[in-house]
Image (cartoon, rainbow, N blue to C red; front, side):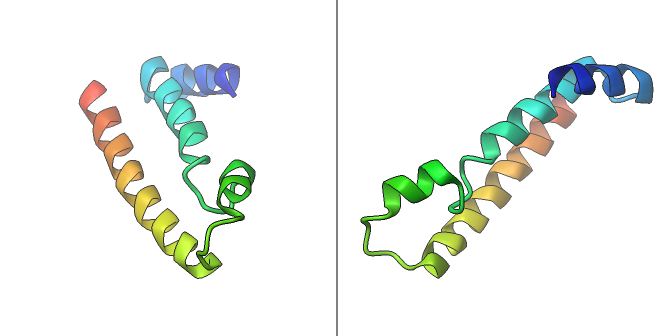
Length: 76
C-alpha cells in the first residue's frame, strides 16, 4: 500500500508524509478490531461475548481513529 499512497499523496495534494501516516495507522487500527484473527485467537478462551468485544472494539477504534486524524492534521 505504501507505493500507492505515495503516488496518490503526491499527485492529489495531502502530501507524502500524511499519506504514509494514513496507511500506517490504518494497518495498525485493523488489529484493534475484535473481529481480527489475532484478537479472536487470544480472546477465544475468555468469558466474553461477541457483543462485548464489538463494543470495546468500536470504542477503541473511534478513540484511536480520532487521535490519528488529529495527528495527521498536526503534521500538515
